[in-house]
Image (tube, rainbow, N blue to C red; front, side, top):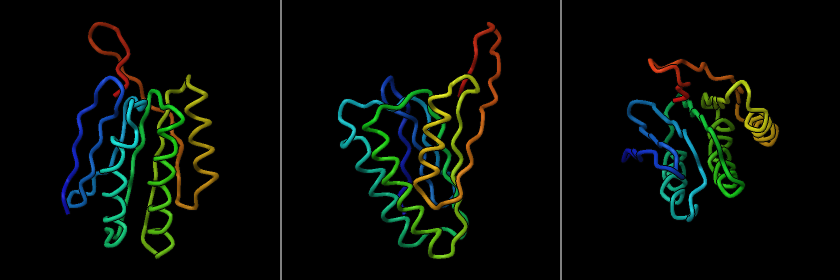
Length: 137
């Protein structure tokens, strides 16, 4: 199965989907101008993955900001993970948020409520870079 690695840009998240190494993460900012074009490959990857998933699947979401259009695609991804879990495979979703970002925490809670997959909502550890600025990712 092919790997997907998309570098983060101003409006789009970093995406790593690698079945072989069991790394699945989407993080950064998600408010692409053409969300369908951006997420189409990602949704197709999860469709293919769900036909022959690893025995253990963990997906990490870690966002600073998302728009409502992106959330629709997150739901599509989570539906695929729901079906994998329903088939008896181990699945875990980790949703990270900044401790001071109630909106992202609440979005994680809403997504958790709508899906059956085991879903953890976790505060991020924010570290300080040498110049004193917060480093989120």
